[in-house]
Amino acid sequence: MEIKILGPGCSKCVKAEELVRQVVAEEGITADIEKVTDIMKIAGYGVFGTPAVVIDGEVKSSGKIPRKEDIKSWIKK
Image 1: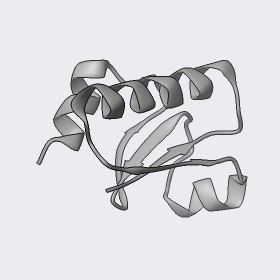
Image 2: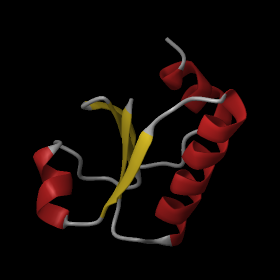
Image 3: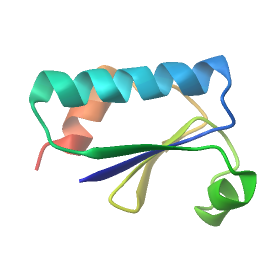
Image 4: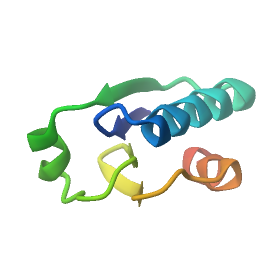
């Protein structure tokens, strides 16, 4: 599983990354987690509101900090 956290590094982006890492650890999921701060790469996903969470190429959330429950539902297959 590949998870990308999109955002320039604001406090909300940092919190979103912390939550994703926490849920992945709690659920025992193996995932590559990458922080993307390049504005052009972020725009390439069609995202104009950060933070955003992209899982396996699909934008799951943008413009807000996702809830832990939502992250859990996204990573469980």
